[in-house]
Structure formats: structure tokens, C-alpha cells
Image (cartoon, rainbow, N blue to C red; front, side, top):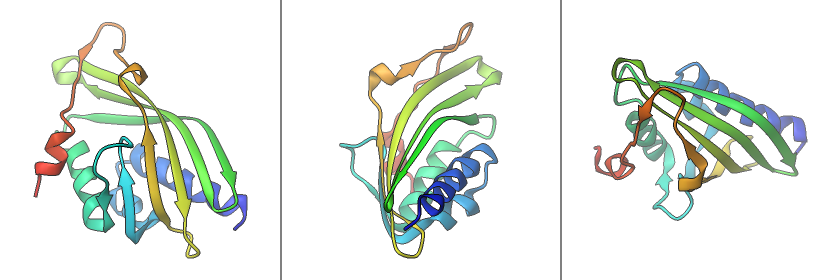
Length: 144
């Protein structure tokens, strides 16, 4: 698989978050995908799992999420996306900046088969002048 194909998939993934486009996000994932965010938590499986994670992340209509891409590395059928997800909730003056390193494995059809997000508490910072926004990832598993 060419680096251009892998890079294109990762760029589409980031664009889906930047443009609030759930359909685009689902289109880059394989039907049988797994996504651990972060690694060590139970993976979200298939399009239903990806949709569940998206709905958790977008449960508040006033929540603004902006991925700031720092680097994309493409090797064979794998890619690394290093970015900061800027989350803002202006109405409550809350926010967070989450530095993430995502690892992706792309299948023969050019879809994400495996997504692994690497981040820990040291990856989180609070934007100046804002209060900490602390989402509860457990809620993502509780949503039906």
C-alpha cells in the first residue's frame, strides 16, 4: 500500500473531526474495525462502536472539537497521526487540550482496520483562562 493512500485515510479521519462529519468518519473505518481510545480501555468494535464513540464525544451540542495535526507518518499499510484535540465548551468556559498519538492499520480496501489512541493524564492540559473539562469515558460504554 502506498504512503499516499495511508496519508489520505488519516487526513480524512482528521477532517471528519474538524468538520463535524460523522458520515465521513464512518466511511474511513472498516466494518470489522477495532478502536481503542486510549489503549488499555475496551475497544469500540465495528461501525456501531465507532458511532457510539462519536456520539459520546458529541453529546453536548455546544462542544467544539478542533484537531490540530502536527505530523502524519505513513509506513506500508500503517500510519501514525500526532495531533492535539482542542475541546472547548464556551458556554461554561471549559476546555482541554489532549495531545494524542494515534496508530492506524489500514486494510487492503483502504479502510481503518485498527485504531489505537495513545494518551495519558500527562497528555492533557487546560487552555489559559478556562476551567478543566473532564469527560467521563465510561459514559461512552454506557450509551446505547
